[in-house]
Image (cartoon, rainbow over all chains, first blue to last red; front, side, top):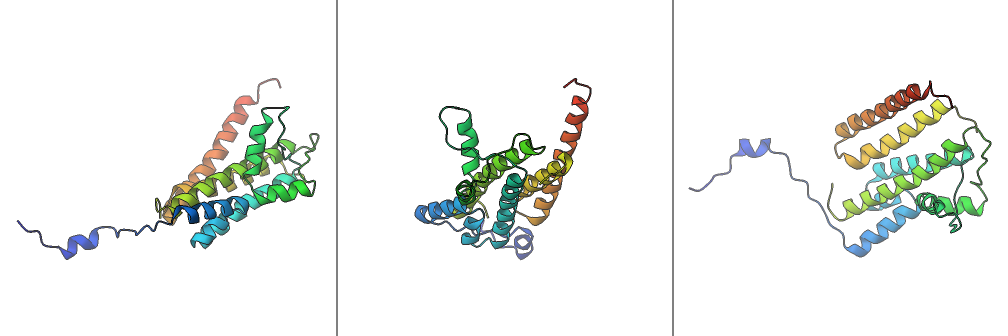
Length: 144
Length: 58
C-alpha cells in the first residue's frame, strides 16, 4: 500500500540538521590552528560564539595560572613523570611558548597558590585538547 | 596574585564546567543545565572531601 505524506505528522518531527563534512586537510589545518591559538579552530569553522567562549576560558585559566605563580614544565627526560606535565602544558599552544620565552611560569613553590596555579596551567592545556577534538568532530560532520 | 583557595576552586569549576557543557551538549538549554550541574557538582564534591579530610592530622 502506498504511503502518503502526512503534513501534520511531518511537522511534528524534528528538523534534520544538515552536517557538512570538510576534507581531511582542511580539518587538520583547523585543528592545528585551534591548538596553537585556543578557540580559533571554532572561529574558522564559523562557530564564533563557541570559539570566543573557549578562548576566554583557556586564556583566562592560563593567565590566572601564571598569576598564581604556577609552574610551566619543560621537556625533561631526567624526571620521566614531568613529561606528562609537559604534554598537559603544551596543550595551550602558542601562549605556552610565549610564556616560556618571556620566562614566565618558573613557579614559586613557597607561594600560597602555587599548587592551584600549576593545576590551572595543566588543565587549561588539557581542556584545549578537548576543544581541538570538538573542532575536529564539527569539521568532520559528526556533530552540529 | 594571591587568591584564596575557595576563589580558586570556584573559578576552576566555572571554567571547566563551561567548556564541558559546550563540548558535550548541543542545545543552549541543555548546555546551561549541564554546565550548572557540573559546576555545582564540583563545589559539592570539594566541600564533601574537605569535610572528610578535616579531622585527619595533616
